[in-house]
Length: 443
Image 1: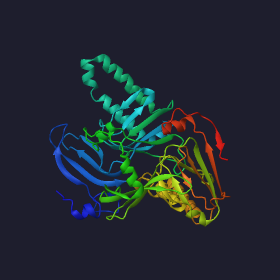
Image 2: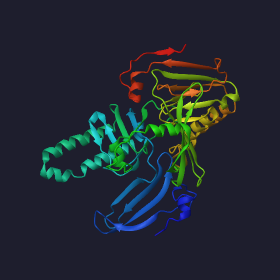
Image 3: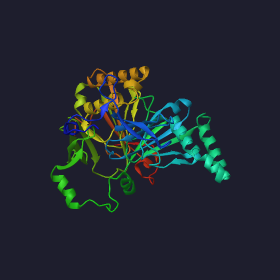
Image 4: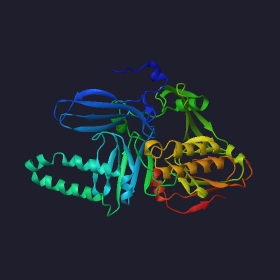
């Protein structure tokens, strides 16, 4: 049995990137009991990393006696700060080939059939949309022989439902697949990246107390506490430090948190994490105020390299658009950030190109990879001031900000519009009592 050394925990991670060039990265083999024939088989364990899914443990069991086999994926990474919900409109057979990372704690739903796979009833998997349907069919078929013997009427109804599931793969009619994961570790492929996926909607949500308990990050007898007013006042006057784990190597790290007043704007909470073990650094921004009555759309015409030094506050509810590149990024793709325009563009490049798990490595498609490389080169030209484009921040909560370098005078290259949120935007923000109107320009 291999032993995890102190150096592995605090220095180089035991979770390796998948690479055909790394001959030393071999799975661990363990003799284990076959639950089908109750003779000994072999379990193989591989500790690795997949972008967006963090660290994972891939386990594969095979039995030479009865030929039974089983493969599972378990998340070994940290639980994310927010849960994630993917809603996919399956409109063609190509959508069935989208790759899906589904965590064990995720709930899968197909609303058109009133069908739901509850959390913790299936192991985590790396599959496709078609694979999810096949797995659901296999689960329903498993006990059908016993049902037909004891309750033929129920068995016939299940057979009819299985046939409906199978017909979904013909995609004669559009249907919806919803994956809701409170851990935030599931992922659905966007095959047209870096362009906006019109068929896929991604939203983030705060976990409930019950979901925290299910994930094991809150004790059953731990009540939900309200923040103390003295604690909030202390945050305004000092930097608060608390212990966390690095999101990359999982080594112990420290997170600094501070309430900051941005000139000509509002108060925000800035959180920064630095890891001494691997050097990873992150920063995240949360709005310190309430949701504004009107949304905000900020449009900047980038004409000079000096524009890259402008301060940007992008809240977690803000979307990004660059019309000249036909690029649009939804509010959930990049979290809240307080950085410069150059820093934000580099973060977008890392997210779309460098950290996309389905277009790099062995799973990469040549044409798709080429498009992303070209997109990254276009972003580099914008940062270098070689390309003039319009950069748009669209925040329905009104909590984003782009520095006016001419303040207090108007900025000739920047426009700010205030608008009334649509019904769908109110749904995303949990504000369903707002009216739906068009844009209203700020005076």
